[in-house]
Image (cartoon, rainbow, N blue to C red; front, side, top):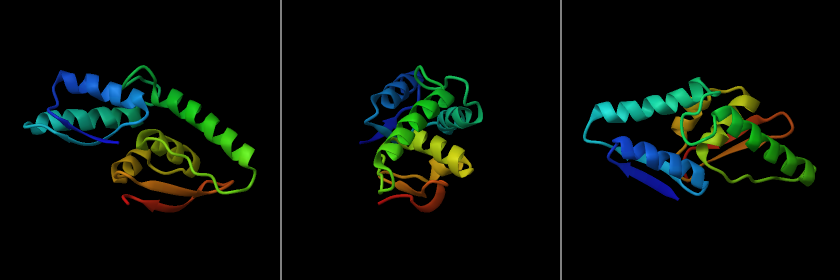
Length: 135
């Protein structure tokens, strides 16, 4: 489900953490009367990708989230052994995964993904077949 955050004060940080932890919600848009507050949120997203070993949102670093997600994806792909696999998750961890496996800029990918969206990868080499930024 898409979430639009209206107002970017200290409470938005709390909400962003809760949204990330939910696994069911994704921040689609943020609005603030202040350009400064919008820029601060964008800076936090940048920090998540630029400093993946630091906790930026919630209680898990981007590196830890990527490790957890990649292990789950690898398990599903091995279990399926050759068929098509669809993984449903939030755009941040998908962007981290695709960045690592397909050697692309995760922050730029994250910024292009709307809601809903998807990235299609060829296995086993993780070559990007298609990016659909919004359905």
